[in-house]
Structure formats: structure tokens, C-alpha cells
Amino acid sequence: MCAKSTTPHLETLLAQAGCGRDASTGALAMPIYQVATFQHPALGQSTGFDYSRTSNPTRLALEQTLAAAEGGVRSFAFASGMAALDCVVRLFRPGDELVLTEDLYGGTYRLLEQIVRPLGITAHYVDTSQPAQVAEALARPGVRAVLLETPSNPLLKIADIRAIAAQARARGQLTIVDNTFLTFANLRPLAMGADLAVYSASKYLGGHNDVIAGVVVAGSPELADRLAFLQNATGAILGPQDSWLLLRGLKTLPLRLERQQRNAQLLAEWLARHPRVTAVHYPGLPGHPGGALLAAEKSGCGAMISFAVASAAQAPEVLRRVRVFRFAESLGGVESLITYPCQQTHADIPAALRARLGIHDRLLRLSVGIEHIDDLRADLENAL
Image 1 (cartoon, rainbow, N blue to C red):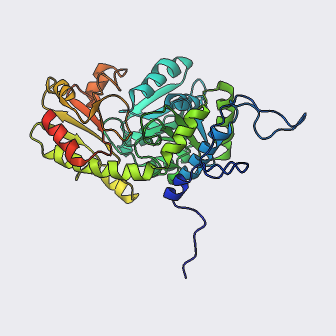
Image 2: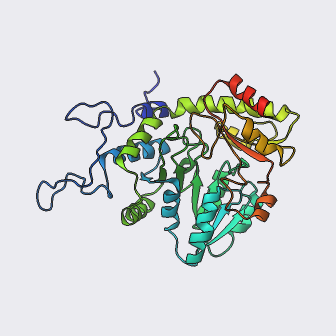
């Protein structure tokens, strides 16, 4: 007979997120503890909750679910993805240097260049899909950490998390992975050697474009203690209402992502054959340089696609003509979205750098939702 596993599958863990935590009433769903402070039983005693900035029962249920799903020691829920990243960079000190994925979210670039660099922390941007570039960057004497976006935003390049984490650990450096695009339903960076996993939980984890949130999951008790201090000291915590929304969204993550990835694969293959499309970036396409890395990890390829049209004049026409795809920033919700990175998500990156990276005025980015594939394909056909 096969031994029974005591660890639930991810689908079971998430479907039951927050269940059975209110023994006094038997409430199936996690209640929303909309409370700022908690009464003490007596002097020197606590219920385990004192003040909601430090901990709140609804947020704690969310954080415990996320830590279990990611395979981490502890997780922390923040008011936004940028608040989560801001907390992570507070782990470093003036004089420290960081290595980052070069084609990364424009908000991350803005944080590093306009807020963090003036404080004396230097960022170096490299193509983290190229092992030689990463190795050279990590060899700099002042480097304390590498922050990977994989797949990168918006060009969908794939970094070898295992190899990079091993190099960084050998040098005493941290590996931080922004896993927003793939989520722990596909990849678990901590199991691959990373020290921290970071999410804009507004995206796939929430999944319905109705909550702004961020998450950091720590892979060691030491990092968890440092992050707990920083979160409590700076206070950018996720409120109980939004914690409840995120718990609710997590319950359907595997189902949503399965449909979104299937739609994305079919759309990417169709776009690659379209006569008015000059390039398609999607890890599931044959010949994509990082596709084999994801396949080796038995990971799906996500539901983000970027593609280039023939002329700069054509891109705004596509945005004007779509009807099923919604012209909006963000990603990861059940609704399909289309974005113009050079003027929206990546506008804070200097124009010359955008041009060098390939984030040009012909590039469009798709967040593929759960709609019927025929409707999505027909909408893009009409727009193109």
C-alpha cells in the first residue's frame, strides 16, 4: 500500500484557506476582524493580538496560508506590492549594491533609482537570463543581493533561479525572486534556493482586479525576524478587509491560472503566425530561450504575452479597437487586459534604456484572462 501524505496538495490548501478558524461560531469563512486594538485579559497577558499593525487575525490567516503555499518560514502581507519591495530593500544599508533584472517593472526601477539610490544603495541592471552577465555582476565586492523577475516584465525572459541562487549563496548574497507572473502554483523559488519570494498580490493571487496588496515570504527564521520588525516599525500592513479579499481570491488560483495559461498558449501560437505581428514573447513558444528551464521545473509558462506590431502608428490603433481585451494597466485578473508598456508600466525607465532593452513604441503586453479563447482571438484579429 502507498503511504498517505499528511501534506495537502496546493489546490486543497488554497480551497480551504481560512476555514475553521473561528471555533466559537463555527464560521466556515474567515471572519473580517475590522478592529484596531485588542483587550488584554490582565496586565502582562495577551490574547496573542494587541494592535492590528503588529498582527490581526484576518491578516494572520492570510499570511499563514501564503507561507504554507510558498513553503516558507513566514509571510508578510503589505498594503501594495511596492510596499512589500520597499520593506525588502530596507534590509540593506548605504554602500550595499544590488543586482537586478534589467527589463523589470518600471515601478521597481523608480523605487531603486529615485528613492533607494539617493540613500546610498546602488543598483546594477543585467540580463539575468544570461549566466555570464549574472556571474560577472555578482562578483562585484559590494553586492549583497540579486533581485530576479522571472519571467521578466515585459519581455518574458527566464532566469535560472537554481543556478543564480547557488552562486549568490556561495558569496553570502541573498537571492530575491519576484514571482508575481508565475506564482507558487507554478514555481516555488524558496525550494529552488532563493531566500525571499516577493509578490504583487494585486495580480494573480487576488485574481479579480479588486484588491491592492503585496507579499513577502521568508525562507529563514533570521530573515523572517528582520522583516517582522520592519513591517511593524514602518506599518505598511494590509488591512483586514483586503486580507479577506485576498484569502477569497487564493481559493481559485489554480483553476484560474490553468485556464489563463491554456488561453495564453493558444493566443501566443496564433500571434506568432499573424502577418501583422513582427515578434512574440512567450516562454511556451518553440525556441524561446527560457522555455526549457520552465519545462525542467514542470512549470507552466504563465499567462503574460508581449508582442510587437509593424509600426508605432499601429499600436494605438490596436488599443483603440479592442473590445474584449480591456485597455488598462495591471495584470493577473480574470479579465483580459492590454497595456502599452513604453507609456504606462515602464514610463519611468529612461527612453534610451527602454529602446536598448526592446521596450519600444511597437510593443504591446497582454494579460490573458479566463474568457473563451475564440472571443479573445477574434478581438485581436479585429484589432490587428
